[in-house]
Image 1 (spheres, rainbow, N blue to C red):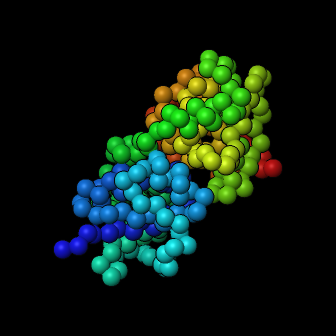
Image 2: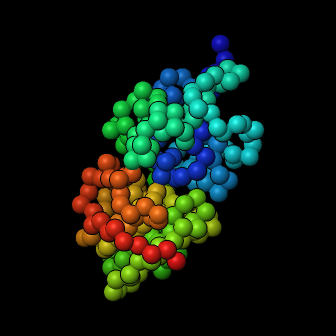
Image 3: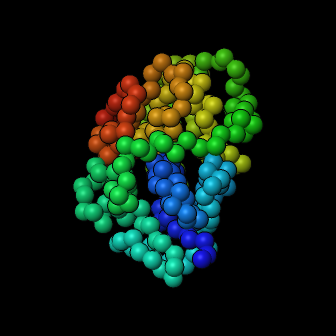
Amino acid sequence: MGEKTAIILQSFGIGDCIWTQTIAQYFIKEGYKVLWPVRNQFVAGLNRAYPQIFFIDISFLHLDFNYVRQCELNGTRIVPLFNGDNILRVPYNQVMQAKYMMCGLDWTMWKQNAMWQRSEKKETELFLALGLIEGQRYNLINKTWNTESTGKIEIEEPAGLNVEMRTIPGYSLFDWAKVIEQAQNIHTVSTSIVYMLEMLNLQAKEVHLYPRLPEKDFKNVEFLFTKDYILHTKNEEL
């Protein structure tokens, strides 16, 4: 009997990828090879972060990404995580939980396999490339969100040295882990970094979260908060 393959359909959203790693590991434990098509710019970083999974460029697979149920296609299991809320017909504030519910899994176990394989080398390289030194006090600012980082909000920057998160060639979002952990204060829009904040050992005295537009609150993610975040509810798009 040949190796079983499961294809996970969740091609965008690094936060979604982090959130659903425990689902992927469930299929691996069930004997599946997990193939995960994502946007090209995420492939290298995700493969390094989660080496047990085969992340590939979404353009390599010619699939209909509108599946409304889990199914077998030519012997391959299709797992349309991106469509879980539509499949289960749940409200918007249960979009993330639905990804687990559609697989019959407990979403409260999401952290069990969500931690990525960290690269001390890459994290330190990025830390130094930003001009930072050990023990330095700085505020970390993240104003952008969505797959192409085109969503942007206004954040009033605090006094002191401010380091703004941005796309830097050769580094993935995961390589920002050291910068995130050592920040004195963090101000970020509610995006994929929130899932990282939940798992990293933060030194920050204050962590400020801002909703992304058109959202005005945190109803779609507040269920996962375990840390004492300072929540803001007013934003202006640039």
